[in-house]
Image (cartoon, rainbow, N blue to C red; front, side, top):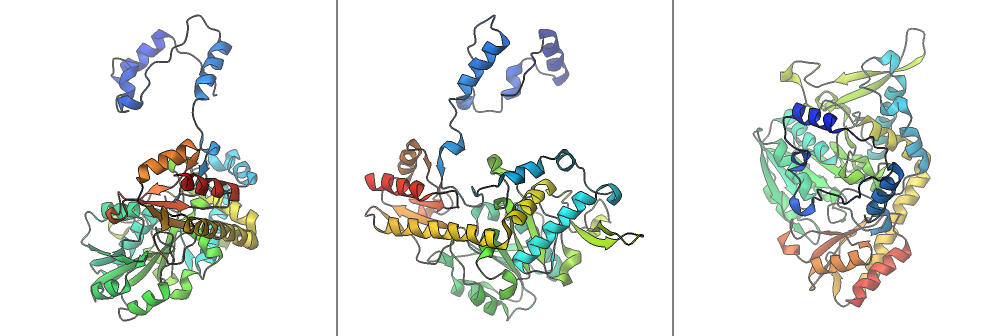
Length: 446
């Protein structure tokens, strides 16, 4: 518990007057009443130690995430984070650093951003990367605007297998842009290629594919590339879960023009939803249309290796009409966490981690196949996420799992009405065989 120095009544009255409110309770009026506990019963005349002990005992009533087996995913993953990651990111010179405009005093920050860019290019196989972005969803939305700037076409094809939250972010981003979103149906958990081919035409700006997709399935990315060959101006945008790139071919090998994603799985805690760290990679010929900024490597006048901000294509630095984005910063501390994580694991360590994810998912798949009341929705190959369905009430199933200290997954019926009794279940190296067996045992007991 953090230390707390009590304010006097006079102090509190001054603060309330400054804020223009009558009571402390007004500060919390936006919190729903059913979850707000406005008063804690504490006896008068207690010592500081006694008050701390009382509040600590109340705090222990919480159920922290680490006391549960978590099978949540859908874009945020509970991967193991080596201790050295938090140690390095806690060094004060890193976490208090401002945007590195002054290269002469920002070499450490500039270097790790450069390393982040290099690592993202190595994973995706693309030519250039920016210095990171806010998260995966904003990276994907920026990719669509990026494509629009390049070919000035109006139609965007987005399969329903793309994360529904990202699709909503995209719609928010394009509110004032003259583009049309066309959603493509899926079949057996992957993009329906017949539907895709029917909708693509000479006015299509980009085709967006998530691979592995929201259902955890691998898309037929090479076949989609063949469809796009007839439309050379159309950009092929890939949203990827970067952990999977340790095992599968990089998007550059199937002709991606832009590859984006979220590097949260590389050393960043779940943090109740953020901040995370998006990445944006593309071909060198599109360099000047990228959002955000890029760090470059050079030498100083003495011949020493040095790092500088090379491209800054936002409205603060150039005429607004030529700016590629209103992104005003990059999540450099989160990018540093990813750099440390990837450096510590190395190529073999990352492959082993990704292999554990896919093995655990397939082990769960085998166990579920033996149950009578649950089944796997799709037969397509998966990485680390699986959609399961049942005739039972899924909300009740998840509550029973919760009582057994299992966060059973994400109910996806609110996004896909046709999958109203389905759960997206995710696996990382943190899910032990015992965790999975317990999960299956609870389902079996229903």
